[in-house]
Image (cartoon, rainbow over all chains, first blue to last red; front, side):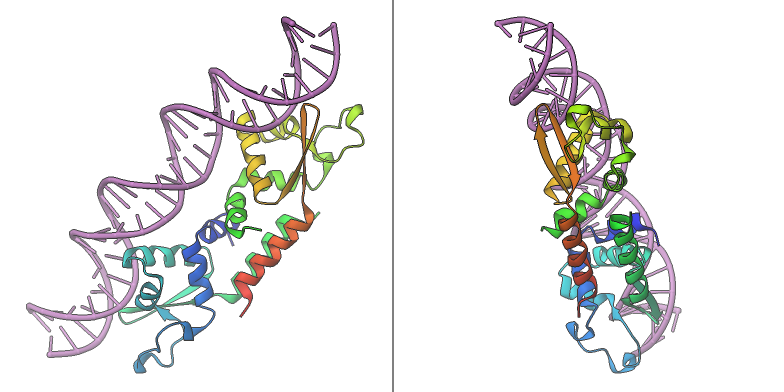
Length: 102
Length: 102
DNA sequence: TTTTAATATCGAGATATTTCGATATATGGA
DNA sequence: TCCATATATCGAAATATCTCGATATTAAAA
């Protein structure tokens, strides 16, 4: 949990929006039948929704992953990203501590 | 409460450190007798502690103020900065909402 | 095994942030 | 009024971030 890296990752509206979208799978097109049992959303869907280039989204998802906000899982040629709820809560607790703890 | 501006202001270790120092007045030298009744810490003391140039600190305190994290009060030639606890809590609630609310 | 599709990485231009020293502004005192 | 002190603002160099298109990598399919 590197608070520096996490705040940095959050310091961008597109990345924050992606984190919000990932709260609800139905913000994206339905998964392919062969991916029905997998959690997360593939990069292509995120890109389409965010309207940014493929490389930008790949980069952004990498930053969100390094920051601990998402988990990546590769299946075949797809990478599926989903929120890391536990780490997100840890981050929030850390910021709260840093800002409020006496 | 502009969450964009606030996150941006937090996205810097020195500014976060200043916010922490301001939790406790005793992190700084004692106030001059004629300022004994005033809240907050003058720019000079913050600069001394942060070991950054005067202009940098003045700039930083301006950013923290615009972000809503501190309140500035001018008394004579001094500007005293203190934390805006209420707004800090509002910010934390907003981030928590953005990150967790369904 | 060649092709296609999905994602990652690279290199670069545009823009933003960091941080400084120099200068301007405001205030209080001699 | 003139000077010293505290802070703010300006202009600029160094560095970081944003974002892209081009290319590399990986995996599946024909």
